[in-house]
Length: 198
Image (tube, rainbow, N blue to C red; front, side, top):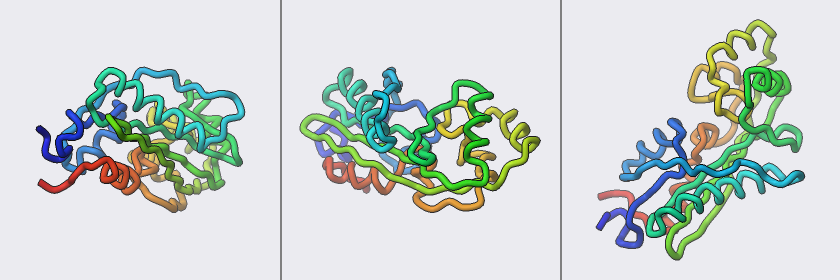
């Protein structure tokens, strides 16, 4: 029996292979493993950004729970919201450029949905952070895009890397911006009966 799970669940599973999410959860000191959810990251047209990240986080968590039905599973998803429009992961460098050009010199929200599911437990919530980019010149944008940090990142930037130099202000939980809002996640895990200090 895993003492931190109090016998309620067989194991803790992160439904993500994101290095940033793995690093954040590792720092918490709870044994876990990460697994690819393998789900479609598509939502119905007209879905609000908040509803979309909730839906996708739940979809990821439930996909992994379907394979490991006695586990406690954490799903998370993140989208950038600019003027009510969701920006997901750019498909290529051109799409990343378009996203960063639209964000340049402006403020936007980044919304991160977290869903924790297990036998007899279900909870989802969303954290929002506000970010403001410096006005970016074309050559600076070119140099940043060449780093490849845009790959797999909503909005085309990676805040835990060199992309942090793009921002003039960040308001909110930095772990949320990195992809897994730890204060929110810890609250949900406590609600699920997880204990933290052994």
